[in-house]
Length: 130
Image (cartoon, rainbow, N blue to C red):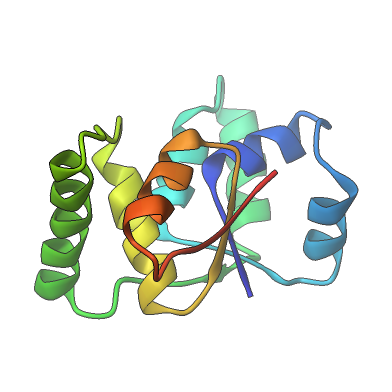
């Protein structure tokens, strides 16, 4: 299963997606987290688009963090490990998304350099940049 980051959903909704993503979507091999859901919806410019995006995303499989407190600790640890190596992750939400992918053994598909940097430090993150 593939955890599809916000950056890829934006491309898909703007018809700038790759055939790989279109195939995953068609085969229902795509999943999201609550924070990806939130990020995509907050980009809506009006109520009509918000509802359209919501209807599409609600058809996805949702994955959550495995253990609320421990998972947030693990996410903070990802951020700290990167900082210790001189890498600043621009969004702590990306650490939550990475943690969710790791905990659920998902491949994170993205177009975000922060995930490349995280994967250099956290070897458990399976990721694919599109």
